[in-house]
Amino acid sequence: MKLPETGRGVLVSGASRGLGRAVARAFAAHGDRVAVHYGTRADEARATLASLEGSGHVLVGGDLADPGGAARVVDEAAEALGGTGGGIDVLVNNAAVNLPHPLAETPYEEWTALWQRHVSVNLLATAHLSHLVARRLIDRGTAGRIVNIGSRGAFRGEPDHPAYGATKAAVHALGQSLAVSLGPYGIGVASVAPGFFATERVASRLTGAEGEAIRAQSPFGRVADPDEIAAAVLWLASPAAEWASGTILDLNGASYLRS
Image (tube, rainbow, N blue to C red; front, top):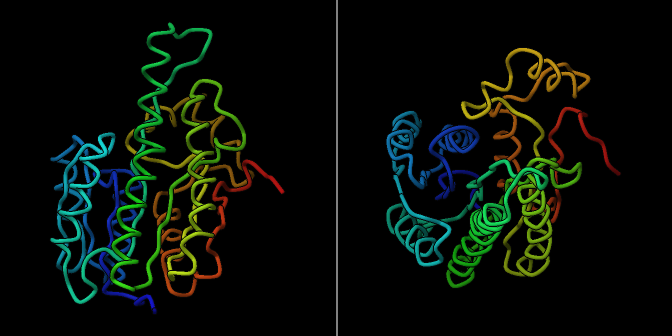
């Protein structure tokens, strides 16, 4: 079982914009074929698809909070990617929600609904996609990679977004469990834990005093570019990174340190 260096089929969940778009571009520039997944942002996902280098890329829509929807996304991506590898070789679990819900200010009904939403998308969708892709790899008898997008917030706490921090911590733990169980099949599983990085979603927060405070969290005096995170994801999905399986890679510019 040997993972190809390039020409692989790659499914990136939540790839319509932001980090997902950067990850899709990184794999495409590397010579891989990418399935760009989106939930509701079809126009932005089409823009991502149009920006990819090379050929053989596809667009796949679906609600990952629904287990049936997750299965359809994997089926469609695998069939469309096809190729000599027979479908998906690499899964990047990037899709996530991050909605504010500080306990002292959030009514109970809203609190429970937001927790259910975060768990369904951030954790369960990651688990379901991982199962679906890994079983395909096992049945094919081929090696593969799963890379999960976690967060610095899993370690430092997210007072205004507690469900986000909790589900990202669970994603890290899930990745380590899967790394042990899937290693015998040649499937490496790793996670990245980014700090703050610049995307369209958070652009307004990076202006004024709040932006200055966020940049000051790192001794480099800035936030990350999504391409920096994508480069790490690309490496973790490579044949050279097999021995990194089980790792949680901190990518936060020394804004939060742990040992």
